[in-house]
Length: 82
Image (cartoon, rainbow, N blue to C red; front, side, top):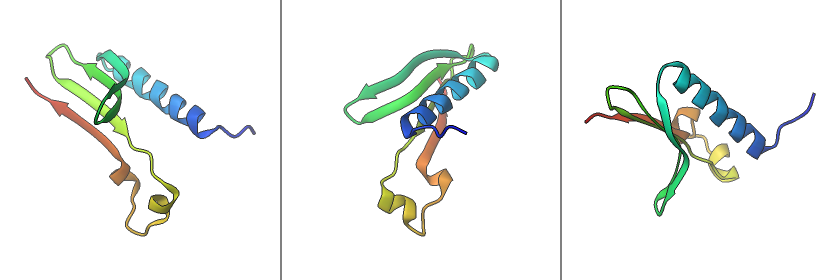
């Protein structure tokens, strides 16, 4: 079995997320959108004009080994309504 690199695993996750969003009828407006505050992996909109965003934050080795860390704490998903 071939092990994926961290970059390959991240790219696979983004492709799966895009497939899921487009399968639910959303239109992907941007991928890997960057600004001075960081990056959003996927920006998608619904026909009703709600903006959905998704971001997975990388963690340093120290953060991953910390007792307080939980997988849900390192990702974000949300919607902005008009």
